Image 1 (tube, helix red, strand yellow):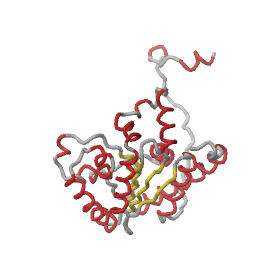
Image 2 (cartoon, one colour):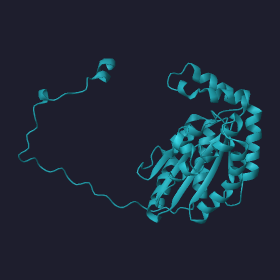
Image 3 (cartoon, one colour):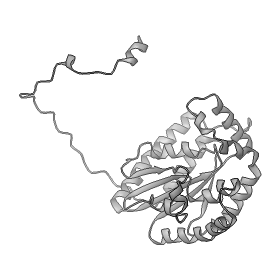
Image 4 (cartoon, helix red, strand yellow):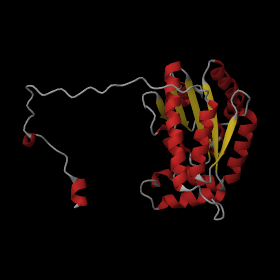
Length: 268
């Protein structure tokens, strides 16, 4: 993000994020009640902010009916399968939301640029993916595809910020770093992918993500707008009174093992 570009104020961001997250809970309730199936694909350059956006979306959702799919490198067995096979098994069932942190579009991105797939495999993928996605949509699945766009300067800044951060250092893989030196190769791959797979039934939606806060609000707001959910009140819940103890006697505390009070030791 350039120095001239102002980042969204934190207070305003947090207020709107909370409002949108309340709506996400309402959307999930509708998905469960109606048996809808939702797939949201998150793609984009490395360090574009996909993971942070996904975290804010699922933060307050019920994990029983909303899950994140982030697959590792394919195993030897998976490499022998039809390419889409390992992804299809993770599609949602009735009343479920699936968020894909990268997806079958790996073939058109990193595999294409790094030479992990053959030309024949790549061309076959571009031919098949619009057909596969139309089959999903025709079967009633709500499919939404997001591309997170980040500038080269902002990507470089984010990579540098991870160097001395022990909690994010793992994000700097060799493949990630090569996305800097192969910036134009990834640009060409993305352009070709959009040309072949930006279809009326499964269009691409681009998120400008140099400002992470704005990007998170924009993607959540848009997701809520494309899933035609209806708001309903949750079922009423009555919390019962705690019963009066009759004959239960708690075991002696000295006979139990307690985790040491580390919090108390540093609080003084």
